[in-house]
Structure formats: C-alpha cells, structure tokens
Length: 107
Image (cartoon, rainbow, N blue to C red; front, side, top):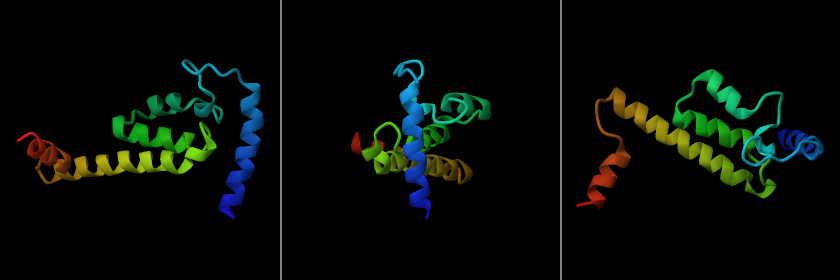
C-alpha cells in the first residue's frame, strides 16, 4: 500500500515540478517538494551536519532522479550510522571507529 501511495505522490509532484523554474543552484526542484524548501526546515531545526544530510537525502529520494531512490536512502542511512557512531563514541569516551581505521591506514 505504501508503495502505491508513493507512486501517486511522485506522479503528482512531477506535475508540480514541471511548473517550477529549475534553478539548479538557488532553488533545485528536488528540494522543493512541499510548502518550504528542505534547507529552510534544516536551518529551522538546527540539525547538525550528519542529521541534516540524512534528512536532505530522505526528502529528495526519488525526486532528483527517480532511479536513484535506493541510493539516496543508502546515503541517508550512511549519515545516520556515522552520527550514531559519533554519539556512541562521545558517550563512551572513545574515538569513533572510523578515526581508528583512518589512523591505522596511515601507519
């Protein structure tokens, strides 16, 4: 059922997108699917880099390029996992796992 609803929303958004000028730098269509631009929401919420990027990729999933929905969702998950690891590392007073991997690679 959810997939059918998404497809219907995607078709409706294509019609809306076609009416918007596509200013790829200042107001890209794939970030303007609702009443406000994604960046306006991110700024209003004061999200950090990782969370903001996750929300950005979730919001544009399937809208920038319909074939890249899975890739956009994978990117969102990557940012969420990285933020989760950073939060865990800070709570446990340790370095994030990726920092350990980077230092080992440089040795």
